[in-house]
Image 1: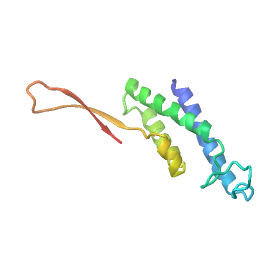
Image 2: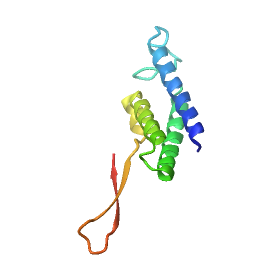
Image 3: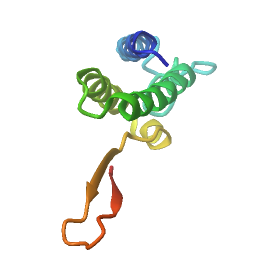
Image 4: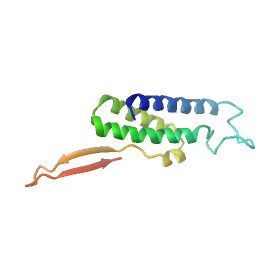
Length: 122
Protein backbone atom coordinates (compact mmCIF):
# COMPACT_ATOMS: atom_id res chain seq x y z
CA UNK A 1 0.00 0.00 0.00
CA UNK A 2 1.38 3.39 -0.95
CA UNK A 3 2.18 6.10 1.56
CA UNK A 4 -0.67 8.23 0.16
CA UNK A 5 -3.15 5.37 0.65
CA UNK A 6 -1.88 4.71 4.18
CA UNK A 7 -2.29 8.39 5.03
CA UNK A 8 -5.82 8.45 3.59
CA UNK A 9 -6.86 5.34 5.54
CA UNK A 10 -5.35 6.80 8.71
CA UNK A 11 -7.23 10.08 8.24
CA UNK A 12 -10.53 8.30 7.56
CA UNK A 13 -10.08 6.08 10.61
CA UNK A 14 -9.37 9.03 12.86
CA UNK A 15 -12.48 10.78 11.53
CA UNK A 16 -14.60 7.71 12.30
CA UNK A 17 -13.18 7.47 15.82
CA UNK A 18 -13.78 11.15 16.52
CA UNK A 19 -17.33 10.98 15.16
CA UNK A 20 -18.00 7.97 17.36
CA UNK A 21 -16.71 9.84 20.42
CA UNK A 22 -18.80 12.88 19.56
CA UNK A 23 -21.95 10.79 19.15
CA UNK A 24 -21.37 9.17 22.54
CA UNK A 25 -21.80 12.58 24.16
CA UNK A 26 -25.27 13.06 22.66
CA UNK A 27 -28.20 12.08 24.92
CA UNK A 28 -29.88 9.93 22.25
CA UNK A 29 -26.74 7.77 21.90
CA UNK A 30 -25.67 7.65 25.52
CA UNK A 31 -28.31 5.15 26.68
CA UNK A 32 -28.93 1.55 25.75
CA UNK A 33 -32.32 2.09 24.14
CA UNK A 34 -33.92 -0.95 22.47
CA UNK A 35 -32.68 -1.21 18.91
CA UNK A 36 -29.88 1.29 19.44
CA UNK A 37 -26.39 0.67 18.16
CA UNK A 38 -24.83 1.12 21.58
CA UNK A 39 -22.67 -1.38 23.45
CA UNK A 40 -21.92 -1.64 27.17
CA UNK A 41 -19.40 1.23 26.98
CA UNK A 42 -20.98 3.33 24.27
CA UNK A 43 -21.57 3.39 20.58
CA UNK A 44 -20.27 0.53 18.49
CA UNK A 45 -20.96 2.73 15.47
CA UNK A 46 -18.30 2.40 12.78
CA UNK A 47 -16.40 -0.29 14.72
CA UNK A 48 -16.35 -2.84 11.85
CA UNK A 49 -14.91 -0.23 9.47
CA UNK A 50 -12.47 1.05 12.10
CA UNK A 51 -11.29 -2.51 12.71
CA UNK A 52 -10.77 -3.12 8.97
CA UNK A 53 -8.92 0.17 8.55
CA UNK A 54 -6.62 -0.48 11.50
CA UNK A 55 -5.86 -3.93 10.09
CA UNK A 56 -4.94 -2.39 6.72
CA UNK A 57 -2.82 0.24 8.44
CA UNK A 58 -0.97 -2.32 10.52
CA UNK A 59 -0.06 -4.41 7.48
CA UNK A 60 0.84 -1.30 5.47
CA UNK A 61 3.01 0.22 8.21
CA UNK A 62 4.93 -3.02 8.71
CA UNK A 63 5.45 -3.30 4.93
CA UNK A 64 6.59 0.33 4.75
CA UNK A 65 9.06 -0.25 7.58
CA UNK A 66 10.37 -3.39 5.89
CA UNK A 67 10.86 -1.45 2.67
CA UNK A 68 12.17 1.89 3.96
CA UNK A 69 13.32 1.04 7.47
CA UNK A 70 11.66 1.71 10.81
CA UNK A 71 13.54 4.98 11.16
CA UNK A 72 11.84 6.52 8.11
CA UNK A 73 9.94 9.62 9.22
CA UNK A 74 6.70 8.56 7.49
CA UNK A 75 6.80 5.14 9.16
CA UNK A 76 7.37 6.70 12.59
CA UNK A 77 4.48 9.13 12.13
CA UNK A 78 2.09 6.45 10.91
CA UNK A 79 3.12 4.11 13.74
CA UNK A 80 2.47 6.86 16.27
CA UNK A 81 -0.93 7.65 14.74
CA UNK A 82 -1.85 3.95 14.73
CA UNK A 83 -1.00 3.65 18.42
CA UNK A 84 -3.01 6.77 19.30
CA UNK A 85 -6.06 5.59 17.36
CA UNK A 86 -5.85 2.13 18.90
CA UNK A 87 -5.79 3.79 22.33
CA UNK A 88 -9.10 5.52 21.49
CA UNK A 89 -10.88 2.15 21.37
CA UNK A 90 -12.64 0.53 24.31
CA UNK A 91 -10.57 -2.09 26.11
CA UNK A 92 -12.61 -4.97 24.65
CA UNK A 93 -12.15 -3.63 21.13
CA UNK A 94 -8.46 -2.94 21.65
CA UNK A 95 -7.96 -6.57 22.65
CA UNK A 96 -9.15 -7.62 19.18
CA UNK A 97 -6.71 -5.35 17.33
CA UNK A 98 -3.02 -6.19 17.62
CA UNK A 99 -0.50 -3.49 18.36
CA UNK A 100 2.56 -2.89 16.27
CA UNK A 101 5.80 -4.54 17.31
CA UNK A 102 9.31 -3.20 16.93
CA UNK A 103 11.61 -5.46 14.98
CA UNK A 104 15.28 -5.02 15.70
CA UNK A 105 18.04 -6.84 13.88
CA UNK A 106 21.42 -7.18 15.51
CA UNK A 107 24.53 -9.30 15.51
CA UNK A 108 25.97 -11.10 18.51
CA UNK A 109 29.33 -9.37 19.07
CA UNK A 110 31.00 -12.25 20.91
CA UNK A 111 30.23 -14.98 18.44
CA UNK A 112 32.96 -16.39 16.22
CA UNK A 113 30.51 -16.30 13.32
CA UNK A 114 28.07 -13.41 13.73
CA UNK A 115 24.50 -14.63 13.56
CA UNK A 116 21.63 -12.41 12.55
CA UNK A 117 18.97 -12.35 15.23
CA UNK A 118 15.54 -10.79 15.38
CA UNK A 119 13.90 -9.54 18.56
CA UNK A 120 10.29 -8.45 18.89
CA UNK A 121 9.16 -5.85 21.38
CA UNK A 122 5.41 -5.31 21.95
